[in-house]
Image 1 (tube, helix red, strand yellow):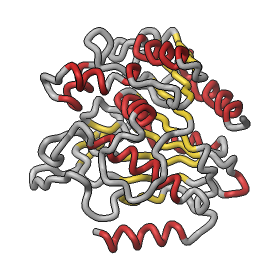
Image 2 (cartoon, helix red, strand yellow):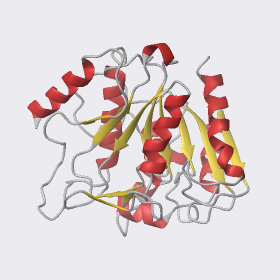
Image 3 (tube, rainbow, N blue to C red):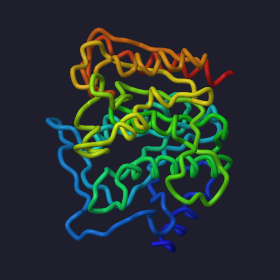
Image 4 (cartoon, rainbow, N blue to C red):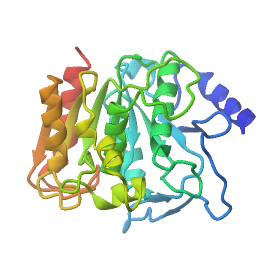
Length: 306
């Protein structure tokens, strides 16, 4: 595994103007806390005109890099965490399509295929997704010069449960969830949270996401620790929140709770609340919420100039 990883990385890193869509594993050799299971293998479903593409049972987490050539790049990059309730990854309309949109506005993107919490392949399933997110952010920052990226303009973007992972990375970026091989920070410089699961409190949470990550009977300490509105501090990165008022799966109060805490710590935050859209639209539906990408582009243009 180690030699294969280094070969793919060398091939990627050999060019200054990389072509988009290069995928590689994020762990050099053994994945921290990894267990093996012959019954647990990655597979996909959907992906046609009638159904979204879903990735199930990720074993080897990876990054798919969409690098903007230097002459077209504004120097920024975004790590994308697709949603799926910590059960599957909706990796196309909440991943690949979003990366292509970011490329169109001069931003390099990295789609994270992260491991979904499962006791069959993890000693501690609660920290598995965060391990992958921290590692991915450090890889991007470590190779920023090779990818024409400003190491101080690397953000994270997440959808639904992927929004929970992005918010967890934004508030738990320094948590010791695996032995670091370098001193690089995993802190995002900004976050874009799309209809995110922020809280695991009973009155706010998406029950499936909480159960899949924490189990059926989590302690209050665990629930509070992964209720990211309770973990905001003065170092939490600035945020753009996008949510629909008619979201019945993940109530907009999740975004509002995060906004309130960022505001309390005087951290710049912006919320776009759309009247329609429901949940899980990514870049794939019509309605008033379909302009969210233009709103996000405007916000990015402002913050990246500061």
